[in-house]
Length: 389
Ligand code: RFL
Ligand code: PHB
Image (cartoon, rainbow, N blue to C red):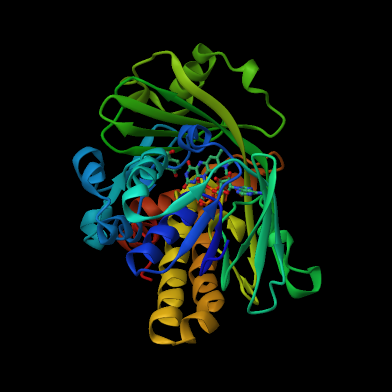
């Protein structure tokens, strides 16, 4: 098989890139290791920045997002019972959209056949070859048969554990990493949210987040030790813990109900530089991971794709290679700013096992400062809604 761009991975990065290329009449094929049901069933991010909404608008795959998504104008930081409101609309003139990654993925997949975007599901043994040449190719096994896909470019959109980044020789790349000593236990439940906006709470027992997917579906998270097992957290224990950590005012409005999904995810900050090696371009989680505290993971994947799709469209349609040459530097400049924001919000809101009383006072002082300073609130708000491209 031959195509212009071989895309590895049908997560948000791969699907958005595929659609943007097809809209520009560029050929591409997506290779995905999992089944469609598996990809559609993953519960992940819930907050879309303007940049991400703009991609769905540009593609015209936005009807359900505008009909069912919830525009939010602010969120709260909570600490020891006090609520600090960050009015992002007032401070930045922008809002964020509450619309699950699961829904974004479903909308992009539903639109794929009509737009000639081909996804090959359940491909195994994906390997990248000749990536430093202009004739790279990918080999894989599908339904027991070996296949080969030749392309001009390969887009590595295969997440943190995919083969793309690992195809870059060690001497050609550099990794930057921080692994946090805790994870997030997430719980989805068919109950109304406890508040109209998200609440990020710092509590002596650990961080908690009250989020939502709709007016009738809530998503909650609590910080747990990294070695915690989800089996040790029956629903009632999670609800009890949330009630303690979110503070009386918020907790008073919690509606309990059975969990639809419960899972534990580790927290990590990670960047791989550069994001291009020859004909291979890395995008999304394949190149970087942020802790979910700033709601940046999915949105960073989207902004990578804005740069990458521009670059590839410029190359194929106008014979302009500038975007290709500058992709890695442009994307990384935005990635590092989101890494900084996600790291700082994680440090502000979580309890670290080796925190000293001094460290705790620093958190309290910073929260006091944020509560009293419109300048500090603006700094948080402009990062939360998404820095300009
Ligand atoms: P994805 O979504 O991981 O998609 C990568 C795709 O590549 C496929 N793949 C392969 N395909 C072919 N061959 C192989 N060998 C392959 N290996 C992997 C995978 O099956 C998958 O379909 O990466 P992408 O597109 O870059 O999108 C990034 C976002 O998904 C990610 O940043 C966020 O979901 C991160 N994240 C969260 N972000 C938030 O902002 N808020 C959250 O609440 C939040 N929760 C989460 C998350 C990520 C999680 N992961 C990765 C385990 C919760 C979890 C559990
Ligand atoms: C979510 O609803 O899944 C969510 C919201 C905000 C975050 C992280 C996750 O910062």
